[in-house]
Length: 482
Image (cartoon, rainbow, N blue to C red; front, top):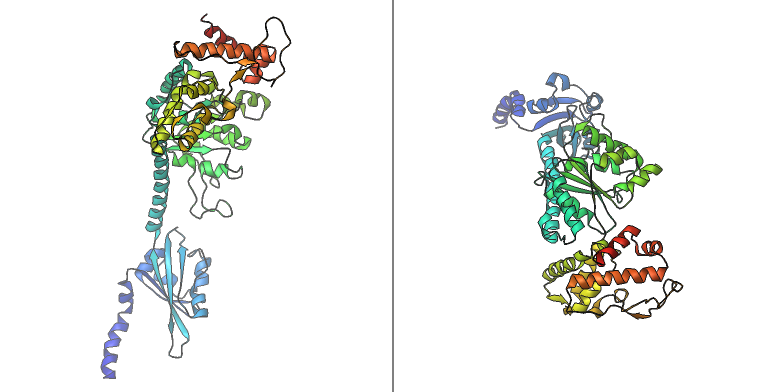
């Protein structure tokens, strides 16, 4: 019986190489000292080395020759007597999983180590591609969420004010081009919304819109976040490298919010991207072409900062191709109530509540100065919808908004009242027989006249109200019907 079994084993031993070559995974057999005894054809193909180059070589020697990028696991398996696994990258940049198992003598001593290698390069690349696609999907999802929330692109925007209507016409003309756009305005006026509307009205609307908040990214990371980095570019970097925001926005639009906060060193690199349409990832020496439309926004006066040297003048001039300056809400009072009603409808739908403004509440909203602009109005309306049931009355509004008394100048010459002095008379009475715009215009003129009397001069009133002198004169002239 024993002789019969032996007769069957001899042919197997004679065909061992063929048996190993029939295995799809790479097979590497080493002795306990790490010297290669057998390898199969799949392992040759994985490593790009012939059997003659491998057999008889020690695994440490092969590592030094560049076959592996990390220490081999054979010594670990011999030392512990337990299976082990690792991921290796070959010299031609192929990734493979290594699963090693010990082979023991009858006395339990590890005499051989068998390593099974499997190519996972394609799997790794697919995983990386899926990761990038996921980032793009998330970007698209943010866009969809935004436009569902905002009620749709350009056509859903409120612009009753004549200056805003002119601005919307400019937006459409700018959107039709690939020109760099610079959106200016105070905090809360809706610069991001304008940037998104430019993108949605552009030929790039089907491609990504990627927002970058330059003020929130640490200075030491902003370059790698914008332009990406090569594998091993710095300590802690992902071994595969990382794509930057510009690459994520490829073919679409990148929105650089708060660009005035961008460090000077990075401004020069951004200038090169705008001029040459090329970018270089951190840690790489090879530039890449990029096809991205740039929209920047800031609430800072970049022209003054360029003169002071705190912002690069050449970058400022490069950004100032198409400028859209959004006026503050206080300079477009005819937009206040339409916006308030839009937000009331939106948040009423979101929270499944039906609410309406009383006439007095609307009067107060229309006459308020809105230092926080559209964002302040939106947040206020959301809070009112949440906290109120049914009609929103004047008493539901914040105390600071419910000004029922106004300073009245005494007849004849007088010293200007001190700022913050107590009110001395009632505001204009509400007249429901007059057209709304006529009442609003009369209130605006009365408000400005009282402010000038209160602060003693047009210049001081302009400073305290956050307006300029020409705006005050223009508003008073318009209210007088001149």
